[in-house]
Image 1: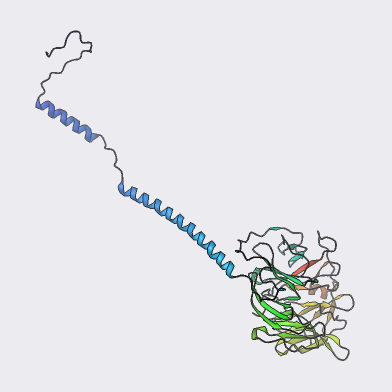
Image 2 (image 1 turned 90 degrees about the vertical axis):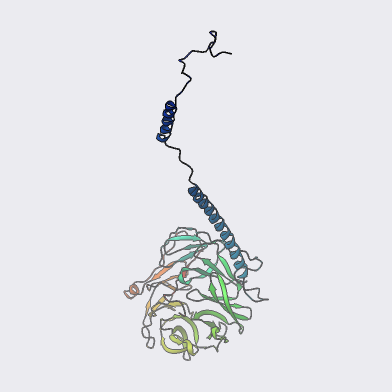
Amino acid sequence: MSGTRPSGDNRTSSPERPLPVGEDELERALRETLSRRVDTPAPRRADPAGEVLRRARRAGRRRALTGLALAGVATVLVTTGMAQLSGPGGRDGTPTVVLGDPPGLSVSPLPTAPTPVYRPGPVRAELDLLVGDKLDTSGGQRRELTGVGGVERAQRIHDGEGWLLTSTATAAGRTLWWVSADGGAPQVMLAVADAVAVSADGRQVAWRDGTDLVAAGVVAGQLIAPSRVAAPPGVVPVGFTGDDVLISQPDRGGMSIWRRAMGGVPGTANPDVRAVYGTRPDGRLVGLVTTGSARQPCVALLDAARGLTPTRTGCVAGLAADGLGGVSPDGRWLLANGTGRTALLIDLADPAASPAAHPAGPPLAGAVAWTRAGVALHVDAAGGLVRVKPSRVLAGERPTPSTLDGMAPGQRPVVVADTPALPDGA
């Protein structure tokens, strides 16, 4: 083998580099190679600390999401347990009273209250109105109340918590519904009760249950801390004065007080007191009493602390004896029925004298409700809404009824009583 290429090689010829390389040439080539490596920027290495921080952040987010999910599950379980522990109250062997839910319904966890369904309503009265199963608020909104019918009285609950609705008397008794302001279907609180009375602030209820009188507080649609006492036949609750229950004896006449907070029994009835119209700001009750041998109906201020003893009495010519009426929030005016087929606006500034009475439009056919501004609303026998403003009555105006749009034949609106500026008994 020789170091020369054969002439028949088909490779392209190129200038041949001499094989011997000197030390200077090697040193120069090495320096050039190193200088090119310095001029070329090296690629960036991975950041170990940054990678660790990023992994820690991702793990923290996963743990946070897992914790929120577990907290939600725990909240649902606790809510379910509380709902089961706060089941209906009551006493065994009392089927006529429903605390919370009607008999036969199982206790289930309280559902989240849906947003109440409000629709524009046709009425803009100073107070809420109930027409059939529709509640028209004073703000001009309409809410449909499923399962509610035959309501006779309606009362707002203090602090805007909702409404209490009492049905008319039927052969089975009366029904009391609680309607939450937050929405949801109306809830039956009492069923088949012989008589029902609601306090002016909507925070207390009293009813007749068989041979007993029962009273309880109202909290979030539940009847709490009930008091029960045996009562004579025919005695029924008709109202409240503070925490005390006003008791009436329709068959024999007269009224008394049940001081339930003191664990007492209904007091001896005052036979001269026929009805209580309402309460003045000083705590005295305005009542209907009969006086003299003729048993003339008169207006009196009653002292609840002394068994409804009249402290001042004034007789009004033509005052009806049916006991229908209501007292204005300032205690100045009484709107009651007269015997001459008209309502009377009676000035209570000096009940000891003969109070001045002014004709005030059609007679009352049921309860009267006063606004905080001092305007009375009631419904007449024909179902018309009557608005009585004392200043206009004093000026000689005779209030006339207004027909509400959209009412079915034979339907009557119910004026919802507002709560006082201060809760009853506060």
